[in-house]
Length: 101
Image (cartoon, rainbow, N blue to C red; front, side, top):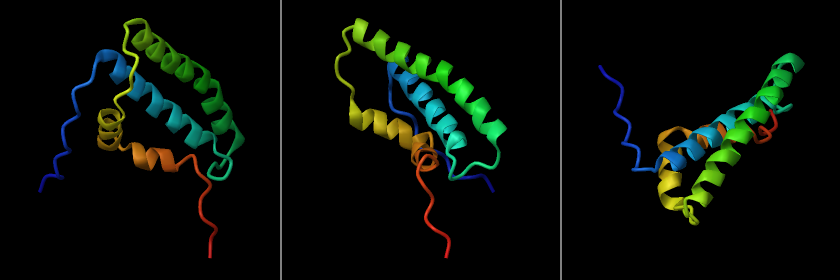
């Protein structure tokens, strides 16, 4: 049996796609750095070092959109793309986990 098919990604400009990809990469790294979820300092250190490059890519994608005159973020469309790409689960990794019973 095949897994359920994911809904299609909404139509995005290349810059919007880069914003989404870079944003999710930053979330993933922040999740690895999160001291409430981490297991070792070396993994957090490596993620923190990589964070610089990913935030630069995010900044560059947003700057490109701005330079092209794309002054609005279409939040509904971008939120749909984030949901398809598992952004809700990835965003939860940066929060403090609930206390254990």
